[in-house]
Image (tube, rainbow, N blue to C red; front, side, top):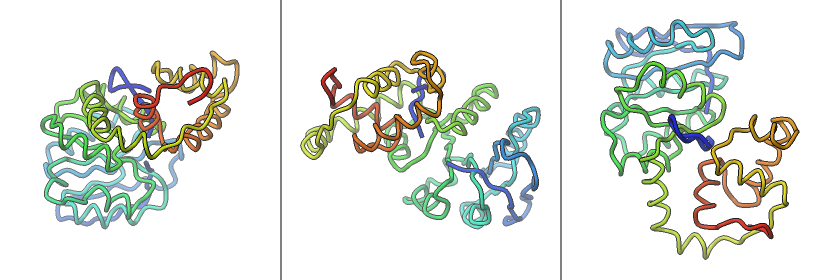
Length: 253
């Protein structure tokens, strides 16, 4: 796992054919580009902020803002027009008035990866957003360097989460610990699976683990899929939370 400059567990999307939806907001098209380019849909009510974000990404050859919107309704119309994966960078204020805004976005675009920008770090909102399925939460005041790093990490399949937020999420899970431990069985993990999980808990990324075990990143990904299936989790963050409540031992989970 790796944090936002300290920790990042796991886990949505690239788009490629936006159209204009809001007055004064012109989505940009990048048809025919290399699929390795990270495509960004920018949703923000403040034009000056959208301009600033575009300037941050402009020097990065692997990142392109492919669409802009300034309302939630416009965002709904935009994301449904894409056929490939993209990352949505959305202002928290834009979704604050709609209780199921994140679940609805995911329902409309299941592959969408979502980063939410919050004006201030709030425990309730942070926990709810991560539990609803966002891949990252960042402050509006984030530095350009960290914003670019966050986007690349999430594009690589990780979750961007800082130390304070991970503590809040863990505390939220701990409040339900009794129910969780009673409802889950503990399947055995192989020695290699245990080693990989231990490395994950130490903050190592797939490439580092592959190097330590003398194998490839793809093999590590295959092992992780098996671990997720055995433990009933879906990503590195849930794996970390599972391990908090279910200490893993040499003989199994």
